[in-house]
Image 1 (cartoon, rainbow, N blue to C red):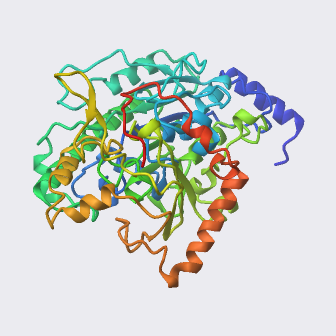
Image 2: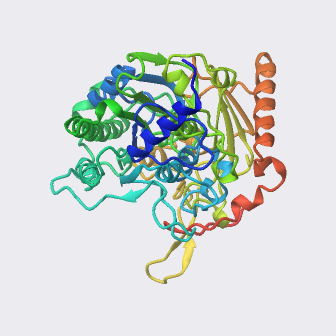
Length: 520
């Protein structure tokens, strides 16, 4: 049927009656009711820790349902292996190096960069979040009037939550949000768990120990197995909250018209995982469903980025993402065609997806970070360490206050490494670093690394065998590095345009600012 001017006017009137006012520059008008958008995001969960991926130590029936009734992604990468920058990238649809201070941990988040909840709100959506939104960081100092994830719903708390589990009742707060929604008005909600972020209640996952599979970059011993099993318990706990959210949608009659996306911000908080652009730092679970809008029980192997989610949400809502305003331009590409089972030249022509790291914790002299850029294809992971002279896990030694003299004195030689979250596994590596069984894993986690790293992740998902200097892989490495550098130039990455020092200058507003000796 040919769409005439009369049809367009009729559709515009219908959408206005539904409370969907649109935004300036919108060219496409959807005849169907605009969908609700629910992003469910855990905190520090690596692929493949969900039972839909075959992991036997994590039973995740709610995630599995989303995957079964929708699409399960096998190669979803986050834009950064740290929570604050990865969430900012997801919210803006931009690479971390394109959002200034928001690329670092616990800094600000400039209003120059529009986030998808704000765009959807302008288009008539009811917007909110529960749990952990964007953070850690200081959005107030940036001139924002609320968390970039939306209006906060965190008043309802739990009374009997296990130790290590946040006391926010995510589902109840989501229910409170839904109760305030105007009928027929679409909503956008960020359902942000604080699990499986550390700390864990030691031993809470004891029943999972035998089912645990230990990644190759960690020793397979009782301490590591116990630590991973506690991590798996928290994943399962959060999956129950996802199940409650789905039940609320069913009760409200909103399930069929809700685009549900379930993922995580970055990888597991273990040495050589979180805060590293290795597989277990950037590879995250991802499942998406939307009623009967697309065929379910499908698997997508094409590499995708969490920066692709914002443009996906806008396209689903009928908003033209080609708006040329700088604060709304996005590096990500909508996944809608992929979800609908269609060919997508923009996605399929990509060689891979990109990730980056700057500052994580306060872990080095003068609050310096550890800049990395990475390109992940279906088979290979290329990493460029831009400052290989720095310690990747943080300086090994820091100043500590003497409790008797109150003076700062140098602490123990291996008493820092603060880019690794405090954990029984880290303690075990440091304490056992002289033993033959532990030493190789300790050095994998903390030693300085070469400028270039290349891994065949199909054969080596633990990223143990660096192929960057192998003659037979020189052509592959050169091609990947050339592609990465070209993309960095095209997207004005300060690290390649000679302005990288500005990234080191962004202030840190949250967490302890530690003192370290200057580099030699």
